[in-house]
Length: 468
Image (cartoon, rainbow, N blue to C red; front, top):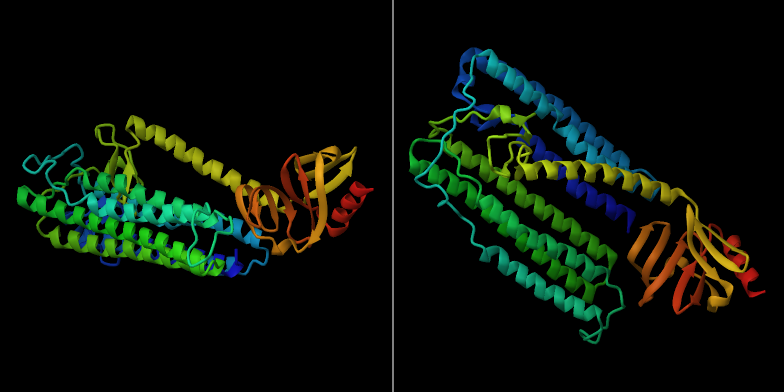
């Protein structure tokens, strides 16, 4: 991967994400918002003395979030300057995981302070709930066809790309090079597209919110919010399909890594644009209906730090988020508890995998010939190839010129090892340090190996000892 293109992708994702999070969660004009740091905005907060306290809370939290935002941007710039690509990639990954959490610390602090203020002025209506029976279950805005049609289009394009990769046909006289990396990437984005269908259904079936004793107002409010969700999901799915289509075209006409990476950057920017437009429309809807709100439901204490929903009395698994955009789960629900445990495990495993990948990338590989065997070693013996099993062996130069596509294994420059498609041939075994120009290509038991050691001398010694 082009080093600078990787940085551009990360910047294209993180900068808009951080800005959207900052302006959405830390508003200047809190009086126009439905929620203040995960606590429902109420008329009592607008009284003269109380309003000053809310101003102080929101002002302090916004300043703290602004400082974190500026520091985040500075760190992003520093990350782009790290010379070692592997170290930089690992650092970026850890930064992304940590920064999103740090950015919501002032939000959590504001949530605690708003809850304390709420108790201080004597607001206590927890336990009061309202149900809307007139329009219950009847307010929907999603048309499933709006999500299914673009996914069908994307599926057709992906099938065409897969058949092309299988060499079943040519386009303008051009045949596949045997590399399934692009069609494989298209498949992963197609899965994302289909994931929008259950997500869209879930959002469309969120329990209708009660803001008024007038059923028509409730229906119009919920319809407007669900239409915003539906329109955003439809936009994102079509962007996903457009990416699949453009990637197929790029594979045929350009077949350039820069083209693919540029397309990913544009894709990310458009996705964030869609989310930004959703946020803008959602705020407009809440502002429009704020003056028609006559019922205040108090469930603030069920939101831990304003972000984590834990309500044993609520039978729903999915609810709308109070921090960020989208939905979250009720961690008091039996399934929610299971999901919570798996989420924590997934985060811990991700950290372990990242650290392991970094250690592996910095552990030198070695190649040796002893006891009549070629041994490829890095932390453990990856391949042990007996002399008598070798059918053909040759030493070549130009490791960086090899066209390789990983099927399974490890590929963090300069180390590549595992199962790869090499020069259009599938099923090859790779054990290479691409900083070493020479390599050995051999065939053993019908399998082709591309191997070398930590240095050119080490690789050449193994080859010479083998052919003696």
